[in-house]
Image (cartoon, rainbow over all chains, first blue to last red; front, side):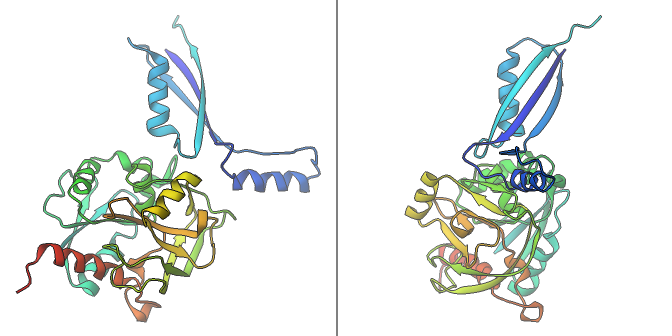
Length: 84
Length: 227
């Protein structure tokens, strides 16, 4: 079994209106040191271990559905869980 | 001419679209459920607005994997007119039938009102009944209508005459005020404003009707031999 954490973020070149609004709000709460806020998505997958390349499978999943690669980037972390 | 109005779980402009075609345009129209797989009997495909699959993940991202999509690709290959409005536009973008992507509106507000659009050109199968530069009033209703594409894509859109409509004023942050674009071949149009809600002066505007008349006109020219 794999526990996979997928992080989907807007590309650097793409404006993030939500992040901008949250940054303004933090400034109003007097956290002036916050220089930038970018909002993304965190997606947890639990994947059964099968033959084949797990990395390739996750990349496929991300590019087909989880991220829109026109405006978004993604990263992921894989943790293998060994059943007792 | 026979139109299909696609229906996804969460579509909510399908009835307006059906009404526009049947009662105002006076053409044949049928609903087609997203799980069907055959559009061969239809001459034009209409993908209505709404919130397919609750807009989960991203608007249109789940609907684009519906059963019906294969027959949309088939209809596209045959050059049939395909119109996606609002969520329908988002589905066409996610499916890669149109370039670019949609983001949350710049000011994060859901915008629901009539807006002025500029008809960029009138030599497409969707705009031939308009004048070039004509300003039309069509309602918008969206929270995610902020069109994005990179500069290279924008240059290509310009070069190929693919920008059909621009907002007269930039209401949502869209790149270069783009409100509607076609594919390179010109048979697929995606737009955020709702022409199907602007087909009767009693309800504020009938400026959207010419879009549907344009589709019928170019279809008749191609398929009906004049006597």
